[in-house]
Image (cartoon, rainbow, N blue to C red; front, side, top):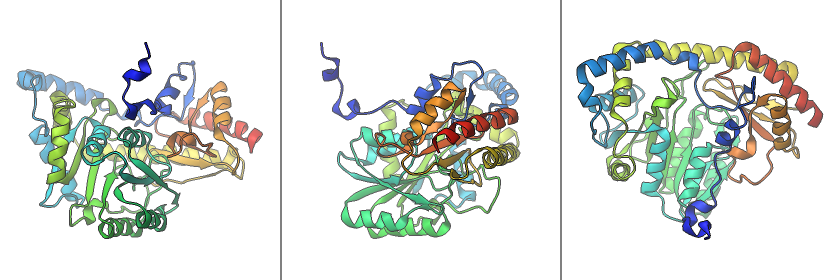
Length: 395
């Protein structure tokens, strides 16, 4: 029996998320992991969750455990629309639905819009989850290099001139994996290009609330007057990743198709999870909670950068984020970070090799991603020192 013959062609070439595979290596006692992508567990409002869960089951237990509507729990949709409105997101033609994490929203949007062979532009590097979702629908991926201002819109236009592109995927604020924030000029240009070449933009914004320095930059969606931008957000980075509560806001005609796809996917996002998020925001100081996270990540990011300045070779460069939970390191050209990664694992430290995040995942990469949100201060310094010692052997 040939199991490969049983698999759909569109998934046989997919590789498991290297980040998830890295987690399997982290069972070693005392491992220092800069590989994750989660908020600090010390920020999880576990006491409040317990109070809210008891209250829900005491007052609306039967309601919380039945089927819900696919579009989402109405009081939570209303809260998301209110949050969006304060950020200039959402016009009369837009509609918001709740999804089981932002990842589901992205995948359902791609399922609703992308035909085999359609062109999709994305930042290179980008978020592995979306890259794999795009690959699963057999789209043609066009990776575009970034600089300190975000995606290179001059290169985006070159691709648009020569190819039929349906969608541009971007994480403009505290990008995963680089931590770079796209300038307002680049955001305006990207929207201008989408209008000029008749394509759409998928704006992924899971980290936008986690700013700890610098000035707020308006979302691309807030500039959208024609329904060109579909906007995805999440409560995973501000409340809890395990609840899997996100949302997607876009032109109603597109979101209506997303709803149908969600109906055959999971029917609806678990109602109890939606009720927990809604009641937390309603009954507690959500803004203060977010600010606490910003303060913590600002401290951890500054500490990690200080340690990198101290322990990394001078010809290793890295981004200096103004928010989010990641930064991106680059070693000199011609050096592959996979062997560096393997030696660091042997020495008790993990990070994400750059090839994992690239459009061409088979090509060697001279970059790697570090996460600063989860490790305590002493482990940050210890881990960065170890990475620095390994880097010195290769650089």
